[in-house]
Image 1 (tube, rainbow, N blue to C red):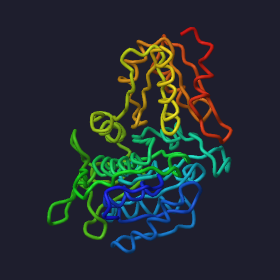
Image 2: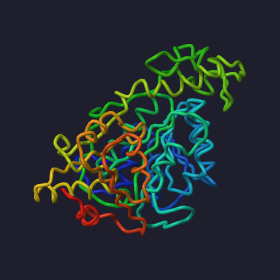
Image 3: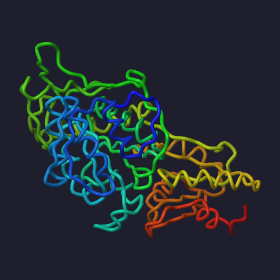
Image 4: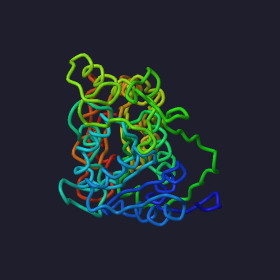
Length: 377
């Protein structure tokens, strides 16, 4: 880390520096555009600072390595993009049910399949929520600036450690590769949360028994013996088919997240209080949306922007409050309507206007203004 408080850096590097700030000491990954700079930074930083970096043979092995490292007590991260994120889904589910804290950075690009490897898109919004099978908790953060690539990476580690669950960071190619001047916080300036560990004797007899407020202690492999499995299990970690125990476990791994939304939810509002045209946008599309709001306000249109920073769980109550008062909801996104589908779940009376771009070009404010120019506003 540099001694300077200010740096002019790329979003991917800000993400890597945020991981270092949070205490990440293990990175397992496989190079893939447009996230490769994160791995490159960690490959140089970690060996020089007491950590471990390993380039795996593919993305399946990458997430397997960080799950294993986390179980030994490491703060572990990987980074990838769309095709690699697809390959990781089975083991993301494993980390959910085994309650292993890991951070997964997905710098999104066009798809499906190889798609547009070097072009921007927001193609994985729904995959982050529903990519792995079964009922499982999902925490996904979506920065819209280089500074947020740093701060949201720190927050991702804090949430992963606190809740003992995977946390996903959804960047996109624009945010990952753009450069901005940001201030690097001093050590200790941002809160750093570490997992609950066993007492001095290293014993944690029930590593899957959590109270209402925090996940159970997580022993370190090599210092304590405990069982880890992808099967449904009891509080000790051993597989079970007892119906009541299985139901309780499935409900618990979700409720530990969704009953503490106050620790997870984060969003930004721009002139939403009186907005009759409400824009819903995330990531780099939200930057264009904010410019569109400014332009509309200059024309006398009561426009506002609701920007989720925590995409999952979606801040539905806060969004619905503003959506209820709006005549139109405009959803600009670099896909064919993934965020629009979310908006439709929480709005019943407001007309939703999609603004979709999937040609590999950045979505600009002019596209948004053009899409709503015909509206009677």
